[in-house]
Image 1: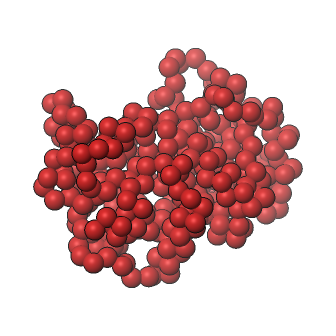
Image 2 (image 1 turned 120 degrees about the vertical axis):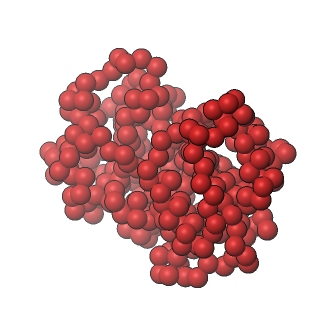
Image 3 (image 1 turned 90 degrees about the horizontal axis):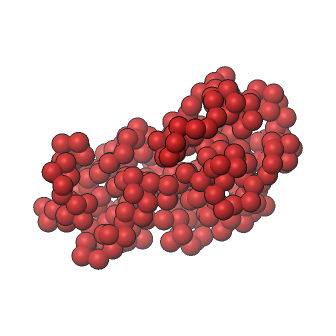
Length: 292
Ligand code: CP
């Protein structure tokens, strides 16, 4: 894997290889890298989990990490993303992790750039490292994807997590259904209420309401959203005994999920974050090994 840009680019065998390597890292495997590589994390949108867990993964792999702050970089003086990345390549950076507000920003880096690029989230496009850590969490729980019933609930149209996971899970044989407000449905077919989802779901994947990507302030009040689309305590009680709850976070408590359920027995929300470190170690190792 020379770059990781989209879940569209990964075959099931590659996905399974990354999940396998993440499991090895979780059991303290030694990194298989021939030298000390240098990486930089270029985050042009806010992040806690992705940025911090990449930094943790980079340290565990023994990489050198060059600090980069978008707010004090020359992008503030109008430098393009291409010129920023080319600059880092010129001074010896081997790979970059990029989060950017523009869907498909990586297309502008597709020629002329010769360092590894890992997509840490592009606008409403893709979030492949989140998808892989979600897949790892599901695999840990059920040991398979085939025929699993996964319900993705919330702001589908604006969610890069929904798109990445729907593609990947379908490719791996899971049955993916959706529940969302009509306004945020995009071009997918969705269920009309929780009633169709609760009795059959193995995995409930909740999505953050992405206010920053909505064009107008119109929409639901927090209470209205929670009542219609949130995971309430009443709905939680109707889930199958072995069902799990996931959310990429950050969580809007009492909007997508009742606050008391965030650390409930069925919740894997903090487990997802824990798993993110091993998945990102596996991705970094794979990109760096392949390129050099
Ligand atoms: N899930 C996720 O991408 O979280 P951050 O925005 O905090 O990185």
